[in-house]
Amino acid sequence: MQRFFSIGIVVFILFLVDLYVFQAIKTATQSLSSSTQRILYILHWAVFAITAGTFALASFTRGTPPDAFKTYLASTLFIIFASKLVVVLFLFVDDTLRLGKVVLNHTTSADTVFDPSRSKFLSQMGLMVAAVPFSAFIYGMVKGAYDYRVKRVTLRLPNLPAAFDGFKMLQISDLHTGSFTSTEPLKEAVRLINKQEADLVFVTGDVVNNVATELTPHVDTLKEIKAKQGVFSVLGNHDYGDYVSWESREAKTRNLQTLIDTQRRMGWDVLLNENRRIEKDGAHIAVLGVENWGNRAGFPKYGDLSKAYSGSEASPFKVLLSHDPSHWDGEVNQKYSDIDLTLSGHTHGMQFGVNIPGLKWSPVQYVYKQWAGLYKRGRQHIYVNTGLGFIGYPGRVGFLPEITVFELKKA
Image (cartoon, rainbow, N blue to C red; front, top):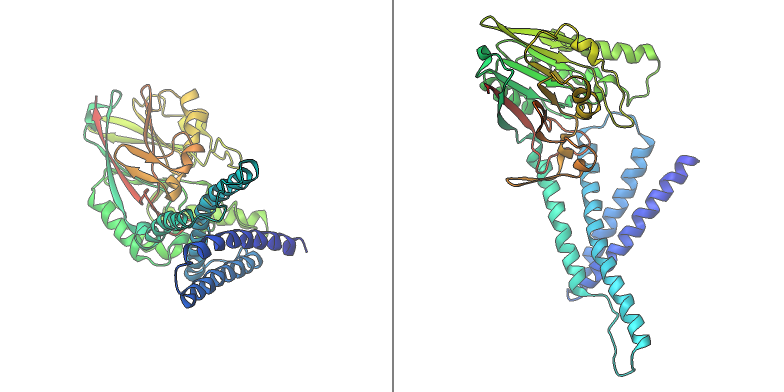
């Protein structure tokens, strides 16, 4: 009964939004023929019916694996609804002005009359502006999800041993293999990764969405990732299966171990609060890897940095792989000032935003202080990779799937 009530409340809210937007459609199309208006009205309410039906069905089938059709249908309907909220803003402005005109008509002289009818201009403007995010999000699904970009970052580091000058490290993050319906996109990503001829490759968490078996169809593709001195990975919050209702604690533990074992069979060195010594021409650096450690409510602290750090004290240069960038302010730069570089992911750049020269913006920046790109404090750096895959919304706008190549330089 509680579920029916919750569904009813949401459907009622959807109806109110659509009823409000319908006012803009009627106003903006009043100069069109009656038959054209009728078609537009039918389409508007048909979309509402499909949205309400899809939401209700999803509520009763929650927890079942989504297929491509359901994912893209739900995302398209959400995009349409989000675009309608833009129209609502314009209608709200219009209604505020109309209310002011009504008040003026009652308080001014009779020979001054203000027309309180709805503004055709504001209705049309609202619909036009709403078309911008709608078009962007649709384009993000069609093109953005697999528009892989190689980003090159040069880091000048005082503690880097001279032997590692010109050393090349490559980072990918947040593959979310459960969101891929085909192996072809990841084959292209692997081709681009191998083309960089990196000395080290790092995978900074969220290899899957929820369960280890999501990785299985992509094992043969991802095991082809090559690096001169190894591929290293750490776990992200999604890798633990925390968002699944397991039949037992043992089943959840088995799932995590399966994911770890699968990565190791692929040739990846999974760092579970550990470190590795990387040698070159008689010098060495350390690669540390921690399990997921989030400094925000709702994200667990599985990581043990003290354990990962132990044994690396003598290394002049240290790279930390930590999925969640909030770990940097939460612990890394508070207790471990000799960790030179932290590599994280997790934020995805929210898969939406503005990312052009001179302007970088996404709603996720109001949640995470370090959320995309390179940040520096003193001698310490953190780089937040915005991810190779996607989850939820099957697309990307502004923050495209990223392969980051770091070239280390002795400062």
